[in-house]
Image (cartoon, rainbow, N blue to C red; front, side, top):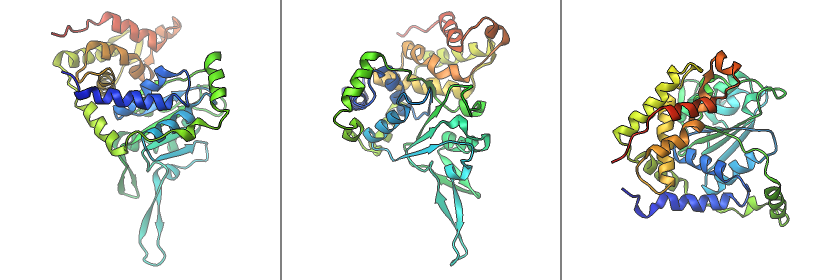
Length: 317
């Protein structure tokens, strides 16, 4: 079973080639971001300021022809700034909806963990259901819709932990990190003639992206692969190192990400290696470790790798 002309993989190579002009030396992260977008997921970037998170989001919005909106979250940002609000028309006496910043294709929630819990929760319906409800009226978001949120490392000035319900709605949590010296030199040289962001061109329309997302969603999944994913998730709920395991939403996220990776590898079916590849990135941010694991200085990533090693993978015929 092979995707016709490997269309998804070919598009992906072109997309990543464009984004690399702006974000240098971060190919693995760019691949994960693209995979999450193709899987109709949302991305959480946890990093220090200034490493290129906003630039990367802008680059993807331009290459994918996505309408883009950004909110710099601070304690004074209101839920209505995100979802929109109703305005009274003095002439007719009717209420009219004024769209909020989230009514776009790619919403950048910058430093989300600096906002109040009430404002953070304004994103929950949008991320889960692709809609917002204001004054009892539901407004459907444009398709495709993806949230790329950034947060400063926990403990940074003015930050608070994101609610567990919000963390669970992010398909992956990633980090760009500092560039190595060679890539940083390339970054500086690339900007001597101007910002390369302005040279990026759209490679496909948002309608074409939505079609590709649907194609990824239709990627073949055998019963043995489904059972493998469920066994891995169930192992997180039974592990002595994990106080709270992964949710059913996490099961769906692993499935969607495995399908996206399969397509990026040129296949229209999922193999166990796809599941293993996405498992840690998709699950680690959702877990709460037990006091015992924390006392042993174990990380969520380490615990998940142990689960991968202990869970037999199916053999495909």
